[in-house]
Length: 323
Length: 213
Image (cartoon, each protein chain N blue to C red):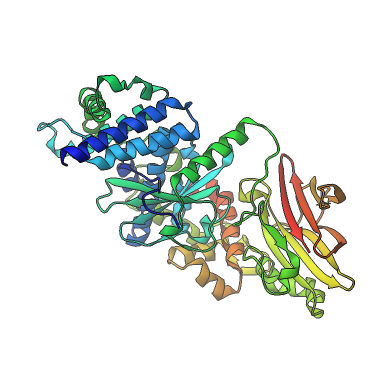
């Protein structure tokens, strides 16, 4: 992907303080592999924390889940909190390994992932690179981009903090801002992996009942995904898009917002808008106190684009579609 | 290292230092130049540490701590502006700083703390009891507490429609080392539903769990 010579990496000493902390953390665990996982995660997080300190980037180490031993017990996390609840994942990798492991629980609500190589002696660390998104659990090291991409991302983040505008963040797993979702292609089975079968998002049996009608017709496709309306999982909703091609070059589109599995109601004052190709709002729905879901239905000419905008408080997410 | 490559290194470091000086603090360009600079210094192998026999046991730790603080100093604020190319090479400037200031300063930090419990505040907050009340590790205490579940709190918290997928059961599977994928297959519940539910429950139960230990 990148030639090795151009790659900006950072290698430096791991501070003895970090090593001691990692030892203390991992000494709580009796299972050897868990202890080692916690040790490496801790070293990776602390090494990146030092680097960001050098760069004058504010971090909030104490607020990171990776610093919480209860979280470490059951999860494999190496997160580092930055300002404004932004969160960076610092995945450790050993010398000689070609892949970086990113477990499912670390794949969402991150501004990106850095790969941190820990030397065998645990004395030296090396930040190998950065990726903004991950699509599965094993990321080849050569997939990571030069650290200047990371520095750019940090700059954007700091800029966002300064300008107090509504900012747009990416939904779970995937960058949606730049990508246009092509609904016609769904029928050729070209569906981005962030869009899941409804049975994966809902209780299987309930989903069968509630969405049974949709499977009755052949030319109907429904897919859903998790959307984060904030920087933490407390503000997740499920977006479902159902597409039905009609005659005369049109497609019927139903857009629904549902609460995630554990919740009964949607957040109040959540709004869903459909914007036309000029960005003008054409329809809107919003939640009150006890809404179980909201829905908008419309037809769109084929090859015509539209956008969906979800807004909750200060946070807006815009997704661009084409039928 | 022969004279040629030594000279090349000096030219490169100087270029990077001057580049960093050119840009505003906290700009992307300055950060990039500083990253290249400290990275080049580290991998050059040209850092020279003062000899010290007294603290032989901790020598390596003292060196690491010293470089850590040296790099922080180089990058912080406008310190890089203190490097004057007319007075010498970057590596000379760096080694003088290390020998006169950062190495001596690192000694008490490393040696002094040897017998103290070295826990800063954030660490204390996250680990409720740093000295176990009994011989059991924190980990074992939590596992036992969840297993006993005296108020049946942990079984009552489950994924809607899946009473078997309760907090206690997931916790048990996780500490038995099962992956989300394996749990997902066993119960027929999506991976993201599982870990999102679990992470939420963890947050919810954190105060109770902390209290028990």
